[in-house]
Length: 66
Image (tube, rainbow, N blue to C red; front, side):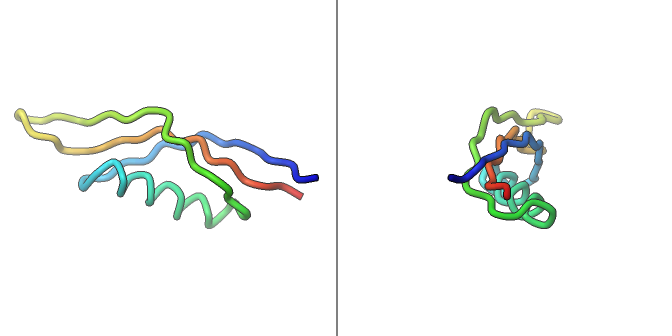
């Protein structure tokens, strides 16, 4: 039997939501092992002078413990 745990993380990127998601998983994997999935809970953008400046994601990362 495996035990799973879920953490919530926020990430941002100047490129895209996909890049923000990839950055979050990469950064989380440095301290959390056995990542099984990432669920994008929400997405948003920062707008300055009528232009998209930053993409943001709120992720739930699931990983196996023990």
